[in-house]
Structure formats: structure tokens, C-alpha cells
Image 1: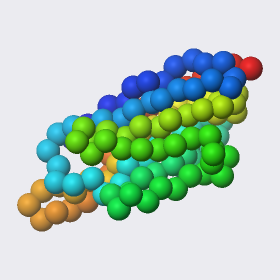
Image 2: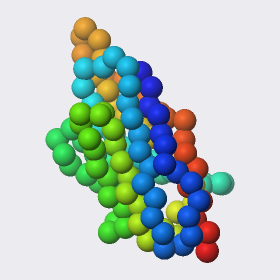
Image 3: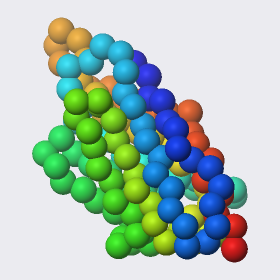
Image 4: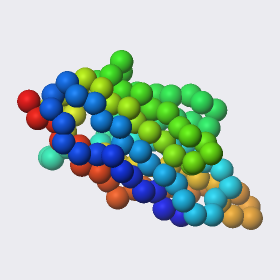
Length: 120
């Protein structure tokens, strides 16, 4: 199982970006997919998550600016980021909780990270 992120990059303050994360491999079900971020010198923090039931959760600092969504047919989650600020600069990591195997155990996976840089 792999999580592959794409769509990070450089943008000017106020601009948009839309990174995506695709889960591939053999699994039964996606229970949750999420985006975390880690800025230099700071701890990794949850940005937004999306459960299989369709519930979403956002860190306060991105509410009304970021939207997490999924394409179940593609096993992909997106993070639509708008009105980006320099303080959003970080490496953004995809995270997933997947159900695998004969007995349906859950496992956690991380993507490799994608850099988002917002210039002022």
C-alpha cells in the first residue's frame, strides 16, 4: 500500500493550491484520510481529515479557506487551499487509516510529503 501525493508547490500569498493524495495497493476499505503539515521547527499538526462516513474536521487556522474532499472511485483525497498565507508554508503529509487483510485489521500509512511554499 502506498500514498502518493502531488500538487504542492510555490504560490504567492492569497493564491490557491490543490494537492492530492492517491492510495494504491491492496486494501479493503479506507476508514479515514487526512492532511497534516509540518513547518520548520514546529510539530506536525492535523490540517483536515475526512472519514468514510463523510465527516470532515479542520484545524481552526484553515477553516473557511481549505476544503478536504475525496473521489472514492480513485481512492484519492484532495485539499483545496485558497487564500494561502505565508504561515501555511510547510511540508504537507497525507495520512490514511486503511482496512487490510483477511481479518480486516486497520493500518496507518503516511505519504512522503509535498512542499507548499507561500511567498508574501
